[in-house]
Length: 78
Image 1 (cartoon, rainbow, N blue to C red):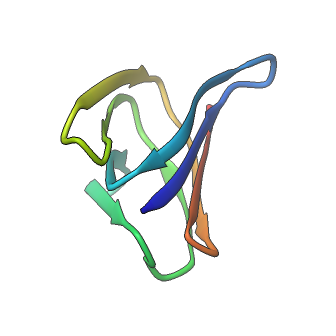
Image 2: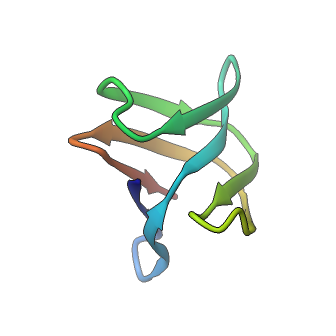
């Protein structure tokens, strides 16, 4: 499992344990799974696709942001 935090300056939009998140990266979509290598990358406008341990998909529209991955945690700052 991978811990995911999706936050804006004033609030947290999502926080929980997931199996994967797909993000709109600058060079194309990027899927992060548990134990992903450390990474910091900008995000473009698009949609986050979050999949939980039961296979339920959640979508969040974004206008850009930053993805940071490390220590089995992905943080997306919008």
